[in-house]
Image 1 (cartoon, rainbow, N blue to C red):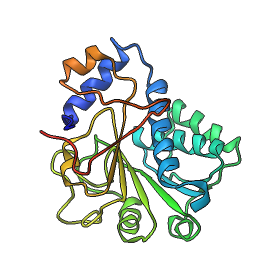
Image 2: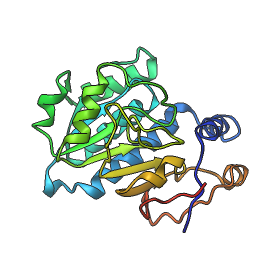
Image 3: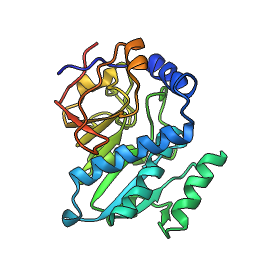
Image 4: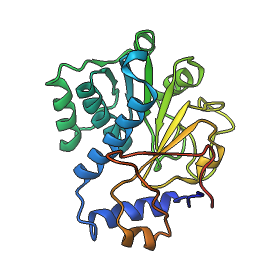
Length: 236
């Protein structure tokens, strides 16, 4: 099965449609996205292989997805730690942080030290809207993600990758290939450069919206919010 990719522009328009004609709130979409991310981690990192999860969150929606995923992972029995250096003052993100703190999930400002005490990393720094240069404090973080021997799962895009053009030819993200990628709603064009295990989380797209954006909805099994795709899945 070859799935169509969704450009950054269309991804943004699709989100607007989900919140208008689809009647979803941003809270609901973030909850569904984070749930999908948590299921990928559960699939790739069974508790028996190590339960320490480091979740690196950026300042936007991608980071919010990571915060939601961390909450679900805690309830599954994992021990998440949050690296969230540029915390949004938006009320939604503040509530997500409060939910984690009420579970005594730790936040850290020292990414390098946290790397030494984890079993799996969730890269929820930059999503499909990323463009331009990687700014502080994230260059060193992305370099660490590139160089670590630990498994890394990226949310919607490997951080620093261009949504249309894939991995950067220079800068901290050069050579960064995470072990797994979960595309949200639909694969983005960058998927054709990705070499690891590729999952899709989008079990909320209606047939009408899928038809409008010429998307193919895969078969989700049972209760699962994710489906695994062949590596390099997605066509322009």
